[in-house]
Image (cartoon, rainbow, N blue to C red; front, side, top):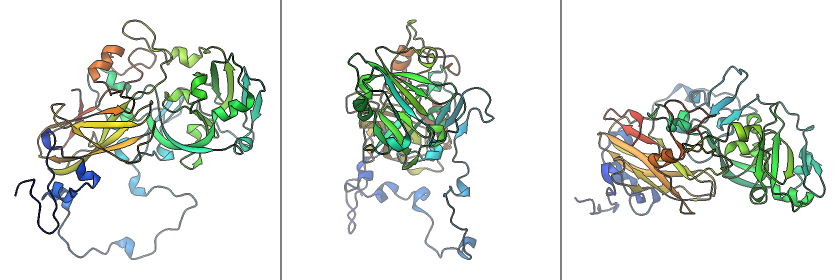
Length: 440
């Protein structure tokens, strides 16, 4: 029977490959008339064992444990944790990376949301914490948390990404690592809080103001300059993260959220906003976030996290067990708005298939993309490229390294080729099912 023929009775069409190396049409995932069973075929890797009586396992023979005041993951998920760059808390920056290769969906659990902390996480008493707004304003004000909670609040899902996320891909040779190691400094959460524009309208902005300086209550008092235009657009003073109070490492009790802007500008433990007429040239924005480009110019005040995608399943650490049906899945996002399209290749770019986008597709938030794939057990080279609604396309690695440079080893955040990598990630799958990081 040909792939275009329909089976009698269930009338289920077998999906046809739409690109090389077994990529199937996204309709198989969208419920558009092609049953996923047709893609499975007789693959033992997904169809399961023959029907037989279920075993009576020990946990069905006695009562389980008591409910906890705060639910924690199962003990069998003990490996689904963040990796720490400074687990002993030495006097230097600490990174905690999200395990994207072990997660699914679009929202990052609070305990797995990435963090970068330069001076340790402060233990802030919310009853004593204050937010001051001053500078070029008509009426300076100080806000308590109780005061902020009285203002109209809204909830929005936004990604936050470190400007140095994916920096290992600036290396001239592909570094072997999981998605967590390569891209673990980005996460997505539902943030709830007050629009910053609401507070600025209340204090009255002086016409001379063009920027604001946001400062945190941590010991380094990290401060960043933010264009006033962004502050009056979609900036938020967030009090909640995924429905509960913000986690300490993510800025408890309040943080600034600047949708689509590089993570360090989303100042945590926010205590002060000063309106000014020019950028402050603070320590971090002049030292760390002004990398030098190949032409010798500084890459300064480039705030936007551009359109980007990467495949999480399969990937390094998520290999394949046997030939048959699989779902290629990953994350796409853009600092300019919604994701419009994601294309996936399984043959190193010779042919491409359009992925299905998981609804809802939200602006400046993670979008999960999925492509059905029938792996024949041979070598494959997987890669994704994303487009956003503004028409921006994820660049090739050659394009982005030509503009921003390469490094011989692990990028130095204080040097060039360390910030804003949004090129592709390529996974090579061997006949054994093992996955390696390659450049293509």
